[in-house]
Image 1 (cartoon, rainbow, N blue to C red):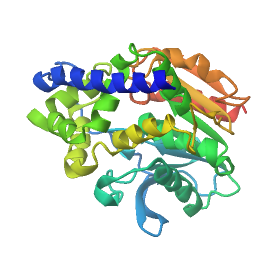
Image 2 (image 1 turned 135 degrees about the horizontal axis):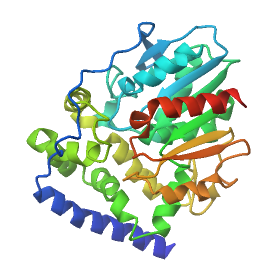
Image 3 (image 1 turned 45 degrees about the vertical axis):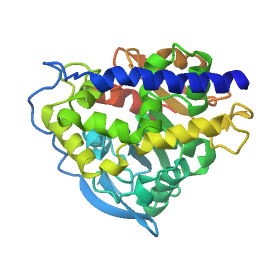
Image 4 (image 1 turned 180 degrees about the vertical axis):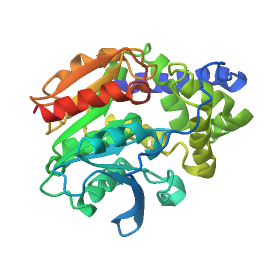
Length: 347
């Protein structure tokens, strides 16, 4: 335990020192990464609704497909995405007869902001997801969560802690969160090349905000979308996401602040949604389809190998690796939708 704690402090110190380089640099998004196309349109059958998931919070939800469908898919976006990032996926599954929902997580897009200066906790977002399931009359139906990036963490939380709410989990790019923590601790200091920003934004939020917003978010755009395949995102899409961050700058790094607290709690003998280094992992209790990009700049693809063990996912689960980056749902929307529908419909 002493070694693990030392590694975490070493990581924090290293990430701060590493951030100085980026703090002083003026990286810009390389030419040719973004396309000049317009914003993609929603399918004509999509409607929009504010759904109250608890007495103090309404979420903005895009809905499509027949209301009486027996299969329901709920899309949970990550950072810095919004529900608009799931447009092709919503259309695909609605056209296959699924009831489909994609929502803005609290503090993003059309959803109400988190109070208390942007404070966010894992339990809060898990309750948001289960509250949406309850509020949209999904009881008695097959319910599948499809998630990416930070949206995957609370979605895994539902699969671990509230499995009666869902039938299955489809996770883009993110393995079981306990594995994410232990793998990065065990592979220090090499892991820092992929997770330094996690610590930087989580522990030094004011500095991170200043750095990220400089020069019209120039460095931030380079760090985030510069890792995607050229042409995956349009300038219009990136501008829409950046405008959302400008409007909610007090909550821009809420996910990373939450993640930093989660990392500290992971090293303590306290109750955790996913287990700790003391207790071991708490496995998902529903089948899981894991989709990884081999060129992910933030998540080590090596985690896909231990990620199939029974302490993380149950029998009936499956893992697919693609020639893609972290932005797999954007780069391979049709291919991954086909794989998801095949997995669901062949079970």
